[in-house]
Amino acid sequence: AAPAGADDAHLTLLSALARRLMSTGFTDALRAATDAEAAAALIRGEETPTGGTGAEGEAAPEGAQGAAEGAEAAAGGAGAASGDRPFRIVAVTSCPTGIAHTYMAAESLENAGREAGVEIVVETQGSAGFTRLDPAVIAAADGVILAHDVPVRDKHRFAGKPTVDTGVKAAVSRPAALIAEVRDKAARGETTGTASAATPVERAGTDGEGYGTRLRRWLMSGVSYMVPFVAAGGLLIALGFAIGGYEINEAPSVMDHFVWTQAGSWGALLFQTGGVAFGFLVPVLAGYIAYGMADRPGLVPGFVGGAISLTINAGFLGGLAAGLIAGGVVLAIQKVNIPAALRGIMPVVVIPLISSAVVGFLMFVVIGKPIAEAQKGMTDWLGGLTGTNAVLLGALLGLMMCFDLGGPVNKVAYTFATAGIAVADPGDSAMKIMAAVMAAGMVPPLAMALATTVRGRLFNRAERENGKAAWVLGASFISEGAIPFAAADPLRVIPASMAGGAVTGALSMAFGATLRAPHGGIFVVPLIGNPLLYLVAIAAGVGVTTALVIVLKGLRRTTEPIAPAPDAHTAPTPAGSTGAGKETVAAQPL
Image 1: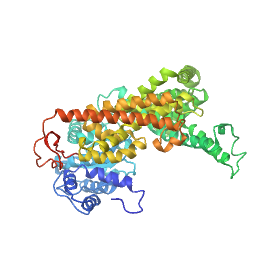
Image 2 (image 1 turned 180 degrees about the vertical axis):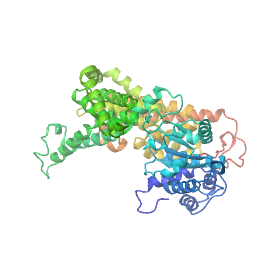
Image 3 (image 1 turned 180 degrees about the horizontal axis):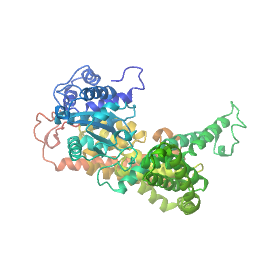
Image 4 (image 1 turned 90 degrees about the horizontal axis):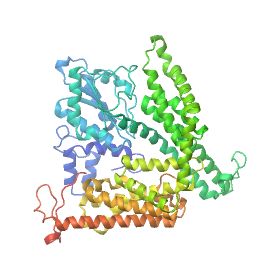
């Protein structure tokens, strides 16, 4: 569906397609398409499907244009009396990647709003950018729905209105319940505080959400901003070693000595640039943890605390503590009643000054030294891992990487690995852990791709198509490529994936493979220590998972009764299938 030469259009296309996939009319028409041209015409919008959950079967407006059209519709009735117009809702959706769930949630809310007779306008804060809701539309709204897994940008715009604050998946799975909830809040007169009286965190989360959930959100906010620095810095340093050799860390500054025709000079340039990027890791982590807690006022004390953590050698653990302390201090300051004359200078002078001073005192004098000792102890423990201990740690990390395929447990293992290499000179054990984590994360999608290739009859047509994409996703270290298979058959796919991941993680540690870059998959293998044995470890895990999946699915097929004849909702029996081998392939969600 992408036009020729429009290489930057994929995010826009994905977001538009994600919205349209929420319409049953569109998905039914797409399934009924008999050739590629018909399917492409539907995706491009050249053919309009009938039926479904859209507005009388018509394709819903997409992206910023859809938001603008909805805004105009809502603004057009702003002057009407409340009894003469429907209930009005403004919503914001955003997910960590900003591609699929962001737009699926928006479409789901719009469809549910039409069914409930509610005017709803959605602002999608996705990777392709976003168009802010018209302030007049927000002012005329009777309620607000915030469906997000990352902080909502400019959240203060919605202060003072009945608000439902929840995760993005809730908007996909139960939009009608969210609409009913915000209407109930409006009927009871419940509103959020004013923009100056309540902080974003105090307005975040559903009612009754525990601090454990909020703590995870704050920490993941910091980690999500830190990981690009780890990726850029790690890859630059790894390339520097590859070009200039393993003594490149002793090269003089490229400002003093740089020869255009010498590979060593280019290697030193890459290595030193990567080192500078790594210098931002802990301050960015701390700054954006504080940002997740207290919005923009938390950035200054967070960055200051992170920089102090580097100064006192408290490292990654110090950054975590500094971010949480900075956010907490800002929240405490914002609860103090300030005279109206001083409120204008609070965010630019008073809060940064007081919070930075408090964070500096606590980090330098009170808790900095204990955290630095804990960081040193963890580093020494990692450095002392050898033999059986290292293999067992690799197996454990492999199990965690494959347990939920990009979920919280997977992220804990990945964050643990990236924390070890997020220093200018990581130890050998830390780089072995990073290698084991990446290898194990590649196993599930590669194994699913291989299984659909060698025993395609055990998978339906949609899974076989997903298997083709899983080759690339697995090779790129995107564990989420196995999610469609795990969602369809979790009791077989997840245990098999965990077994293969544990084998790969243990073998990678046993082989002593090392990795300085936190991402890249098969494309950074030349930069890996012991690359051939590393590939052997991945191949072994893929083989174990593939074999287990095939065996488990085969056992299921032999114990199931013969499938009934196809009906209107099932695909025809594959040609050539007879007896117990006969199967029907149910229509699968796109």
